[in-house]
Length: 100
Image (cartoon, rainbow, N blue to C red; front, top):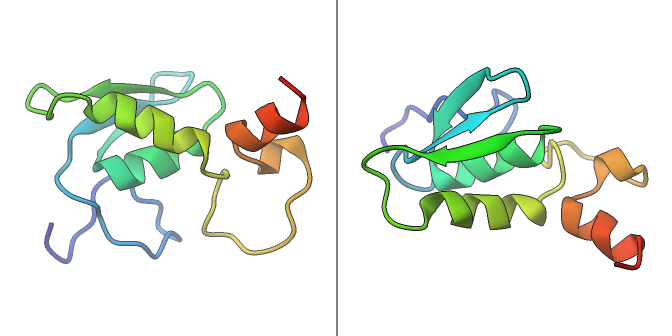
């Protein structure tokens, strides 16, 4: 990607895109943004009830890679500070703490 970042990149997230735009991330109200796998995962991790869909020209497995990556990313991971509440932890961390 050029100096521009994909629509899924949060304004406060300083990271660069991880490739072309290949997925659409939707929230529980069906508002969405297209993004690269990197920012798609970061956005999905920050949504409660979000969903991921591959774009028609996405490489095979793009949406599942984003889904799996999002499970280990904390919501709004670019923010600093202590994180102890379940809503501040990744799905994987919450899963581990619940003993499942």
